[in-house]
Amino acid sequence: MELRRVVVTGIGAITPLGKTFPETWENLKKGVSGCAPITRFDASKFKTQFACEVKDYDVADYFDRKEARKIDPYTQFALIAAKEAVADSKIDLETVNKDRVGVIWGSGIGGIKTFQDEVSNFVGGDGTPRFNPFFIPKMIADIASGLISMEYGFRGPNFTTVAACASSTNALIDAFNYIRLGKADVFVSGGSEASIYEAGMGGFNAMHALSTRNDSPETASRPFDKERDGFVMGEGGVSVILEEYEHAIKRGATIYAEIVGGGMSADAHHMTAPHPEGLGAKNVMLAALDDAGLKPEDIDYINVHGTSTPLGDVAESQAILSVFADHAYNLNISSTKSMTGHLLGAAGAIEAVATLMAVKENIVPPTINHFTDDEAFDPKLNFTFNKAQKREVRAALSNTFGFGGHNASVIFKKYEA
Image (cartoon, rainbow, N blue to C red; front, side, top):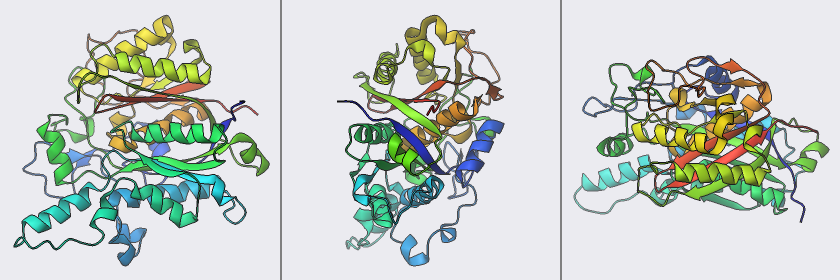
């Protein structure tokens, strides 16, 4: 069976760096930090008092009051991003075969604010179970994909992938495979997360995962820096339109890049810590290269998982050296989490669009906040510190790794007719 080609024809985003994708991409290239003190709740008693929030977000700008009460913020971000991506793709909603258009979304946690609020209200009451009838449908992680399909009448395959921080990369890979196997022609894919609330921040603080650099929030996310002390929480939603090549060409779609391969693996090692030698990371990159039919030397840029944690950054760099050998020194490597923070289940989506835009525009977004070299990293590796770099990017790879040992990598290459 000949596999069909798959291209990206639309992008939408609402992130800590912008309320649209073009704004987000411009700030990624400029090296803007999206981190600041938390405004959503009083974090003065928390170990971490900052995060990468979507700035000046007002739900009333996007939804009427009645509708907003029925959807958790993570779903709001999903619908906002999907709307921009669908519009950007210029797909004709009147003529497209909606039975052949699907939605595969990713979220690691889902409606944590809804869960927090409902349980708090119950515990603070007299024990009478007065729960909102929308509690469960607001909270569950799959409701975003369902509501996107309802918004547009898309009747193709519809589900949500949950693989912690690898969730939306898994969603993209699944959508890619469904299209190239002929199961659908178009997918709305991506991911969203909204965990900057007491339960989210408190939970990650309790496991010592977050940076506590309260004196300098804007520099707290510093992947590959010797003084890194944990990741910074981010939030938002990012959507891409994946489309079968001939379907896109026939309607005259603008094509950003071609998606050519995806890999998945498991560390099978620890609940939260990466394999110390980066074994799962090595295997997933090799799987993605094999799936794409590419050699290591065909890759010019890697958008790494790069969370700014002491163990994770080292394990990933070791895996890159293992897979790419001497070619590793010809690569540009960068962690855009230094700017966006960690969007958890939506991390794969925001990093995928940063990766494919590097391919499209031949510019690599930087790893900001580098101050001190760490002898744990090979000094010959180019981490694109502090400033974007222009170079030819023929093909690029994006890594995402999640708690539970979930690993996923996706590869984009320059579009050629």
